[in-house]
Amino acid sequence: MKPFTTLKVPETLGFASATMDRVAAKRNDPAFIAEAFAAPDARFLILKEDVPVLSAPSDGTALFERSMLPPDLRSSEMIFLGRHGAGGQPVFVHVEATGSENPEQAMVETRTLIDLRSIAQQGLVPHDEVGLLACAKALSTWHRTHGFCSRCGARSRLADGGWKRVCESCSAEHFPRTDPVVIMVATHDDRVLLGRQPRFPPGMYSALAGFMEPGETIEAAVRREIYEEAGIRCGAVRYLGSQPWPFPMQLMIGAETEALHDTIDIDRDELEDARWFTRDEIKAMFRDEHPQGLKAPHPVAIAHHLLRAWFRG
Ligand SMILES: [Zn+2]
Image 1 (spheres, rainbow, N blue to C red):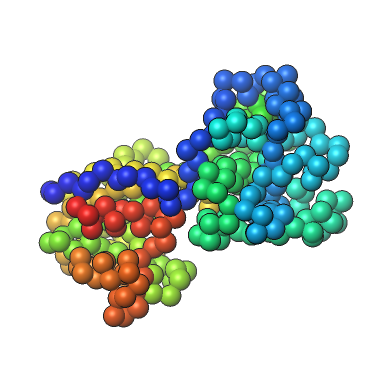
Image 2 (tube, rainbow, N blue to C red; image 1 turned 90 degrees about the vertical axis):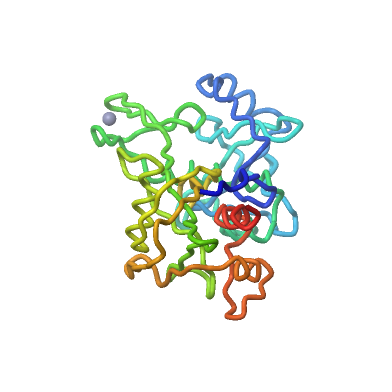
């Protein structure tokens, strides 16, 4: 197997912040959280039902000053992401209540709700802020969907700056989930296997992907998913890199693998199509010049960079 070059995580890879200091050791110190919350340079991300709120796309930032928030907020109700940027600004996440009747609705109506994928693809805020928003979205989704203890069913409350929930009845502790997903390109005879799901934008083909299962290694998951979706048996698997994928809270584990044959048998429940692409076709797709109008995944996605790595290699 010819090894790929190491995947270099580029600036365009979305949803990963290079500069956030999570200050994880201090999350369980309420005095520290309160002090960070009160700091004049504290900044706030706002989410409405897991959708980021921007004051205006043209502002070029998702970080709000305190004056933009409701006046009676308490630090114990906020998610503390960590310290951001060269100045180490404390960053908190304010999750606005669901529904249209809440008193904060008027504030939201003067701003803009934009889905995180569009923010990343259109570069509406700096790259590191996309990473902060991704972390904020994953955490807020988790809090919104885990309000009750999975052990006893009682209500749970936010703790440790939002990085834990504690059951008010049995004291069980619950921690935010990240679901691992393998995403991989199989290669055979200097061609690469890509597929398309019906929900993809028209003409786009991407790396196959699927959730890992309990008790499974990354290598086994890569081989199983390609066999299930495309009927191809694969051999060696090589890890290339990873990407947080907050839709809603996944970790994409990027890999390449060597196909042992090239006969495709598509699972039509999963894929609309799967096929082999030559190097020339991939080059044309990167340039948006494929004769059939086929397109590569967007550069914010790790799938794009798995393909780039194969193309370079
Ligand atoms: Zn409980």
